[in-house]
Image 1 (cartoon, rainbow, N blue to C red):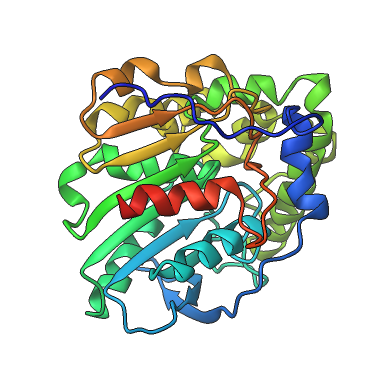
Image 2: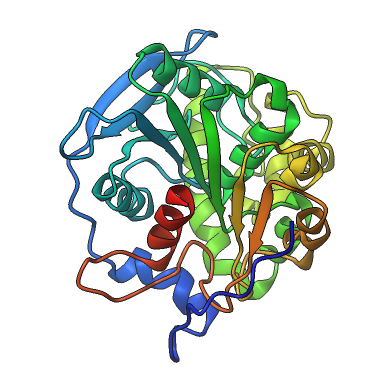
Length: 323
């Protein structure tokens, strides 16, 4: 499939800057007006997942979108809520899922979420289909959640239910090792400190819950994903090292096997991504992967100003799902 033409989406300075696009929504966007209905479901291994349901007016509707947030996020961050608002306005019911370990209450098991974890997404897909209410599902993921979504679609296409008919992924770190290098740069220190603050807190809590399983020595001094993932993420989740974790979990290797029409949107000025996260060759040789690279957007930014309060990414997702 040819790479999609560069969209006309653009904003004047300072929003042409990737850092401004990345930080503005977190700091200044008003939280979208939504009314989520919470649900907690059990997982096959005895843990739980928290879901937020958003229902389109005029229902019942037979189509549903499952939205997955990014690293250290949750289902009530502004960007999943914005996507839910846009989709419900267009007649889609929506489930925003909170990744295991990102709920207000700590999860029950030692394992948590990571960039390549897809079993919990499959659990949610199966759960919503078991309700019998939906004939058509779409998957939408942001950043880490986008990597999970793409990996899920490509790692075992035969396992993906036929009701999953399309997907959209934004700001995806398709090459995890490369993105870990980028985020280790001094110019990205503000982002790393934000991520590490949450990861340190979660790691200390797990050490209290499971005495003797985690050595916290040096945790406070860690400033990179390479250090943290090598010490904690990899061994807890069955990988040999951070390098092994990145290799097995990067969605880049799974893109050629995707069999569902999928839109991947990575902004050219994304401050987290490397050139390897723009998989032009995979898109050119795929019938199902649509790659779009807007000039601006930052990382999970895509700011737009309009009377509806919707961002460009939200309007673009609706357009792709409808067409």
